[in-house]
Image (cartoon, rainbow over all chains, first blue to last red; front, side, top):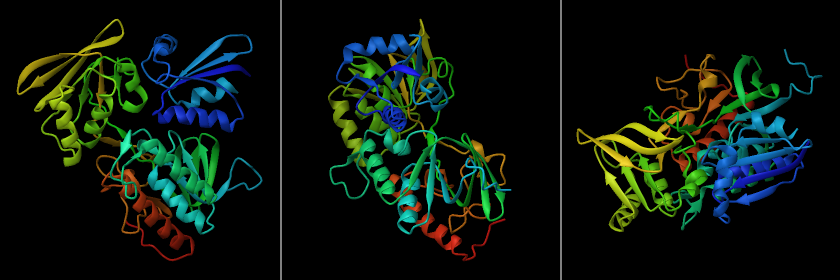
Length: 82
Length: 321
């Protein structure tokens, strides 16, 4: 199980919308970091993902290990939050 | 054969592969006629429209509409009539008579009629550095990744509607954009007028007759783009590159099937939008001959839905050879 989920997004990003839609359909909650509203956190997203893109989804597991999913990638997102 | 006792092997009246404007419009039409319909989407509901900043030429929106908003409205409208959107990928289609069997990431699904509406994705240029720096300076989605280029410089590659539209969008972040156009600009007059205003303001410089040769980087990030302008080498020092040079069909999953594709990979259909597999239709950007317009895709979706209804009612459609 995921202990905490954080998604880095922007206002116009369709793929970000899909990640939230998927997690919402699974009854999950998440913290959102909107980089349009908090541009100072871009470096954090970049450091976590290694890429200049959103969405970046950070899944913190029960053992406090983290899994970072770049983009809307169901093949990685689904098992990470299962 | 269909095992109806197996819940994984769901049977549907209509299964639509994709959930872009053609697919969602078709679903609005089928579900309003009580034809049970499921859509299967591997990416974004709304397709490329959902990741387009602003759509100015979709009828009914005099001031234009944000792509994501249009996609959401289409989704809600289809769901209001009972369409079900499942997130997953169709990997193969088999003709097993009355029902088509679709291999998906959630197991086999069965449908009496299938609509292929998988659309297309932005094409890659195919130059050195493009793959190496993907996501770290090379991008294909301005609405997703543009925010990372506040107060930075960019190259945008392309001269069609998408390239100009997205370059205009990116100016809200960047200090300057070099627009590299292989031949001449082919965007609409309205977009070209907006472009000229940004050129006059010094936000965009247009380079015609310019081919992109290499994307150069250092320490994992893009530093410049090498090009050939009017036959002479040129180099643009920038922080990133956005590529909009046309569309590739999302039809790889159809290549092992008997469904006929054109030489590029778009799906061939007859006058009823039926493919060479009986009961399997195609509409929108994936269809050979499509005009790659959202309004056209919606229209084709409606047409396909009506043809599917005729097919399900047992009216004969000639299958092309």
